[in-house]
Structure formats: C-alpha cells, structure tokens
Image 1 (cartoon, one colour):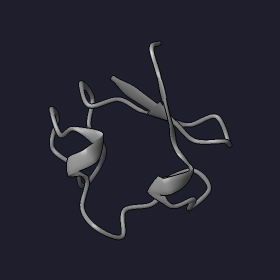
Image 2: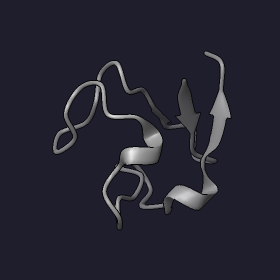
Image 3: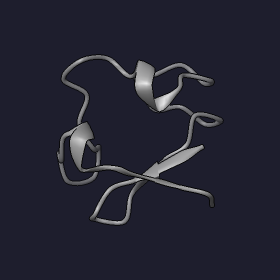
Image 4: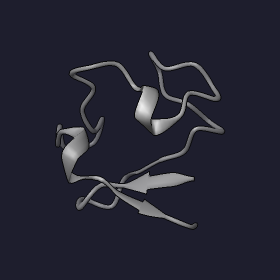
Length: 50
C-alpha cells in the first residue's frame, strides 16, 4: 500500500527511497523519516490505493 503526503508525494514500498530499501513497509520506515519533497513527518501521510 502507498502512503501519500499532503504535498502530493507518495511513498511506494515497491520502489523504496534513496536511503530506504525496496520492500520497506511505511510502518517500518526509520524513526525521523520525513517526506523527501516537503519534509513533512510520517504522521501527515494518508494511505492510498493507487
């Protein structure tokens, strides 16, 4: 499942991120992880089905 930030960025576990391995669930992102686009904290992300 993807999680979307209010800024429009979507975290997709199938692609990971620069410092996050592919397959890392949103819930398993490191403490302190923020949106790479706007620096919003994880609490602002909402699950999306896209």
